[in-house]
Length: 360
Image (cartoon, rainbow, N blue to C red; front, side, top):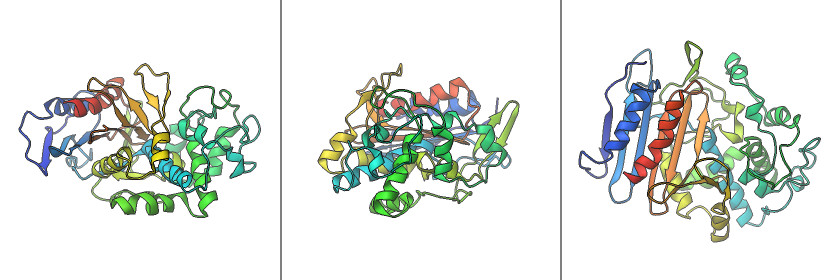
């Protein structure tokens, strides 16, 4: 078990009484004191009470520096809601149709045991395409052995598409990062620009998300940041320096808890999409998960004891992130700087932290 620093709480914007978010402080502290993560962070934003940041543990196992409330980290699959937002904006502009086959924009890209003529844009965004998940066929060990390697998106697609489809498109739900590799290529085909530039132009700049990046081949994180750790057997490896093209449009972005909360507030609140696309975003299908979660277009609905919330998980080598936003204006982002190698308890407490913050 790692020795951790005492939990720190930063309160800004509005002074909050000490008992507020006490349950969240307990959960975040467990992530480091009991579950083995070096460091953890949670930021809650409530339009009535302001911003609360809870940190625990250390950002760096060597220096023992505490986790900064302003830490940058890799957000992994939280990239997907950004990608889905851009695709839905293109739908609103009449440049893409949700129920057209991806073959129309990416001819010949999906072939063999999978067929782009049967898979629609909606299937990609809602994770109902039946395409095999690239992450099932690209192991963490392959990446750890050469963490600075550049990956082309079509290389990653080839890894996935040499395997047969899981089920006919639209038949059911199954999470696959392959869907969002194709969504990124779709954006580039339609706009003629890199998908990351479209995210910057359409989302990051309008919302002034100055601490959020689509990094490409940039292997270092902006400062301040927590270091990202991987547990491999008895060893804990520092994998902070990583070429994020290995995840591309499925999970390469870097952000802060504050920026993620701002993005979620805007997306759930309808600031980024036209009404028709906002309705499509929140039209869900069952995931089949025991939690009862439902999946929209790049956004997940999770039931909770206080009603439920929209959000997404994000796992990338070195980091695990969970988010949630309610329709009435509360948001939370939680991060632990260990992945993979996290205990089942860490995964449980990460998932618990979001409803704890939103319902506390």
